[in-house]
Length: 270
Image 1: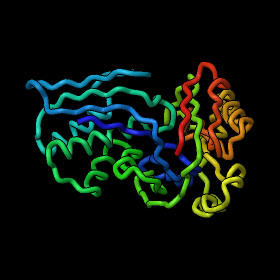
Image 2: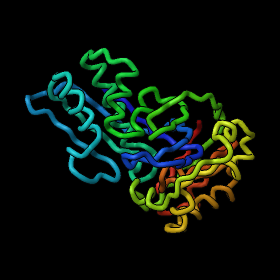
Image 3: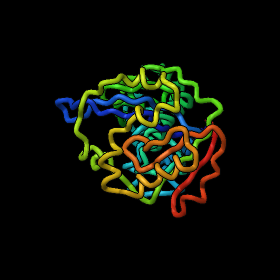
Image 4: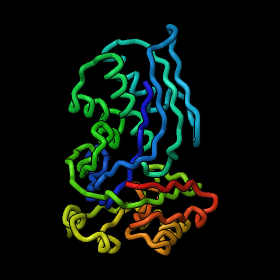
């Protein structure tokens, strides 16, 4: 079976508090993006199985990969055995795009189908939450308001059809720990839902990613990318997640790739 784990962007990201276990309390709208990795899983051709990864930004051991961890999580529970799995990475890492989380969630869904595990959405989301707070979103993979640690999801109807997006990832890797180190949690005066329902041309001054302030101070290049996207005519531009990718939403194709040499650039439609 072959599938295409897509990534996501965040529209607004507020860090409003901290739980006793150290996790932060967040509020954000997560939107799926049609930029995808490629994942193939089949029952193993021998008793050992095989897991391989190709593509961009490949680091670490296979055992650290979330796809491998997702297989092990389900195999420990259901004992269906080894698989041959190949992941081709296209979505950049350290970007705030949830690429690894998506790979893990798609692994769970594919194994559920291949081995007839009969897990429903709720069960898959529970397994996904054990792998990471972004993972449950990719089970249903529809726009959703995320709260709590990011695992509490509520579908949200936001029509972005017809918009175009330019996504820019500089050669900067920002770890989640590094990003959170610069955050001072605070309650927001205006609810995120209310901001999202306002006209998009008002989002620039209202829809805020709390990570931007500290990340931009440390990495001015990322701030400059956002400014260039607005200069190119973006209706709204922001950093996704904890960075370092920045996106701009446009009413027509921006064709702005030439403005960002030495960066990963992807342009598409929503």
